[in-house]
Image (cartoon, rainbow, N blue to C red; front, side, top):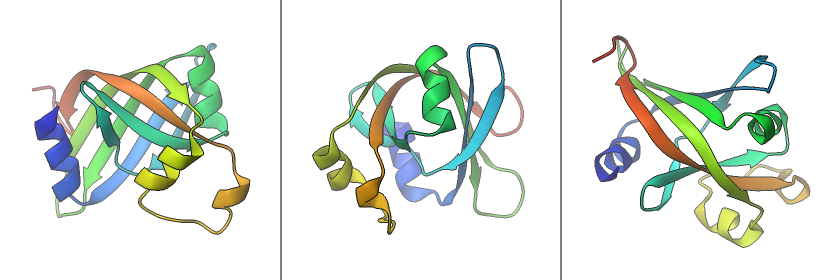
Length: 124
């Protein structure tokens, strides 16, 4: 997991987190790179919107990360939600950017375990 953490700390790009509800209806949303907080887990800061809602009934997600360079490089992370918490102090401490409506939005720190890692293209 340390190698993956270093990758996200040094590689610029765009991330997309895909989830599905209990009936299989899929959603995808732009997300910042994950936070690495505990051994073996990573977390995303989420507002109480569709992605967060989907994870209440289906803990599986995929994070697609496209590197900011020519060609198609990046990673696909297959994730499983293990827990979440509403901890405004911790969220404030770890978040990378501030938005004007941050104080008004209910946010969650959602923790995942990594089930599988693949390159952006291919299966090896």
